[in-house]
Image 1 (cartoon, rainbow, N blue to C red):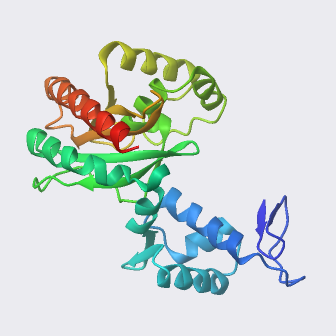
Image 2 (cartoon, one colour):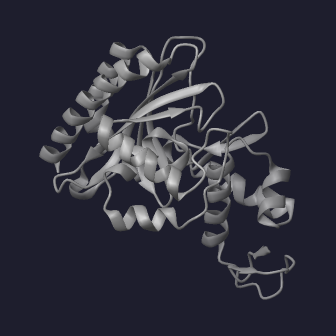
Length: 267
């Protein structure tokens, strides 16, 4: 399957062509943004391979996206910039979930001493819009603007646990990509994880997204009671043992409730 940048469509078994110069540049650029967000820290050659486009064309789009501030290059690898997260954080009424949550995230980081993540849903993924880092040299790291499929992360499972049954059912009908040995791998396992969140109050992810990294997540609710995002505490397994995750989970539930209340007022 090849992405035809001239016709802005997927052509099964096709090849890239410059025939019919009605190129939809926006669609091409969006496609590259999606690929970068999915891979993170990906090089030019790999992007060209995944998009089935000439390297010269990909390079031209990348430089344009970089000039616009959507992506950045680090040692030859491309990743989504923080601007993406900042823009997607904007919600109705001009209020910004990131701005509302940040004071609570800072306090949570001081209380737990681990990395704090704030995410919002985008399709089947959670988009990271804010990260408050720990001072520990050994720590969890996800780039702001990066996306993780919901079943792979504590934030995603927490978000789904507060979602309408139809949303959960639709997600369960999709593919469950495994990124580690501990990733949730099907609808039944997802259902068990969601029920556990409802029982405990927060999600626990034991190396389901990254080997050696554990996290706890809790949904953030809007004024109607529907989830608008999720917050999580993440750290290396050597520090995030079962007792630590239970302790941080209780702190997280309190912080999430405060953020949700503040967001409801701001909205």
